Picture (spheres, rainbow, N blue to C red):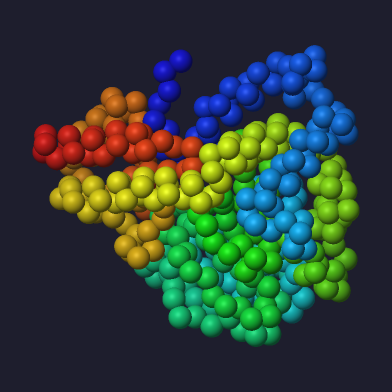
Length: 356
């Protein structure tokens, strides 16, 4: 089968060897005579898969034996908006508003308590990351979004929150770049950006921040309940967890986060160099806040849209149409996207210039 150059924002591209292994396991999981889709989630085979996925997540983040638990939960990253608040919001929470997803997280948290928005880039349609804000010392936690898929911005540094726990939605750049992950007390990410198919959400939480709110927490929203049952309080999203495990194994075989970051930087440098060089295009996000994962850009002449669209479609490119909030184009360059695919897109941009 001929593969397209997939720049989709999510569900996203995954490594070809992960697709191959997963497809084989749909028929027969490791010569067990059973499909991954039909094995019991209580079976030794799946318990081993779940434990390995959780262990690899902590290993890649450098958080083994540091008081963190890795969980694979359901409901997408959007479920974490309210789950964060149920478990951690007693009086007041601080939020950084950098795009659609942080805005939705703020809305959910306000159901359960006071929310202070410490800074926002809404007035510029979220094309930059606010700087020089202060996290109030009396906040129960501080919440931020590391990468904004829709707008193509990415946090390059994170505030010193002191004794205030820091929560980060890393849905669209998890495992893509090195940083000190121990600065965060809770990280969450939907699987469908850099790990696997939609259906599972990775949550990495430091246990000592839990159990401090006075409210009764519903069982399905209680991190402590999920920890006590090893992510299997109810039937987990078996296939999504399995493919996430395969992807984390692939990442390990290929040098881990440090190695993949170099490849991601090369892809970002290639596309942004063309956006800045080519007079037909303009980047949307401020240069200092540009995302390595999602490059957003527009045409300077809307009359060229039909021509450009026909060129990239003819080049077997998929998923570069921009989100309606921004318009234009978006090239999502997740871990498994090869540099060669970015070069194909850049060649198309050059071809448009030649034909214009």
